[in-house]
Each structure stands twice: as structure tokens, then as C-alpha cells.
Amino acid sequence: MKVKYFAWVRERIGLEEETIEPPAEIATVADLIGWLTARGEGYATAFEKPGVIRTAIDRTHVRPDAPIAGAREVAFFPPMTGG
Image (cartoon, rainbow, N blue to C red; front, side, top):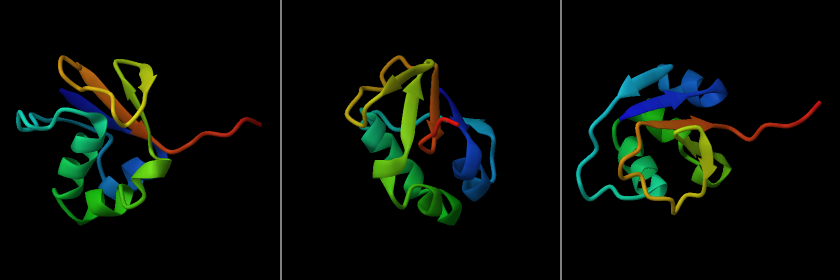
């Protein structure tokens, strides 16, 4: 699956996007965040407060308990405010 990172999430990880193959036991967005966090310091810093991270699967906003099976794209971004 393709994973995209936006705003300060991207800045902390140092990547705009990447293609990953998480292990089969990674079933939800929350599991994916935990798995990514263990990949290195930049990931750990980006996801240190997972409750503030917003996620979209195939361009649809989802909750942390959303399943990732069959996802083509997962995007992570900080909360957005209107202006």
C-alpha cells in the first residue's frame, strides 16, 4: 500500500510518501501507526501523539479502529482548521 504523509507529519518523517507492506497482523489504522512508530526516530516523533493524527484510507476519513485490509492508499495528516 502507498502511505502519504502531510504537513508536520511529513516533516518529522522526512518522506512525502512511501510504499509499504505491513505484516499480516497489522489490521487497523491504530495497528499501522504502532508499526510505523517502531520503524525509527522520525516516525516515533511524528506519531508520538496518535490521538491528534487524522487518517484517510483511499481518500475517505477514518477512525483509528478502521481496518486497512485492501487499502490502496493511507494518508496521515494533522488536524486542519478553517480560516
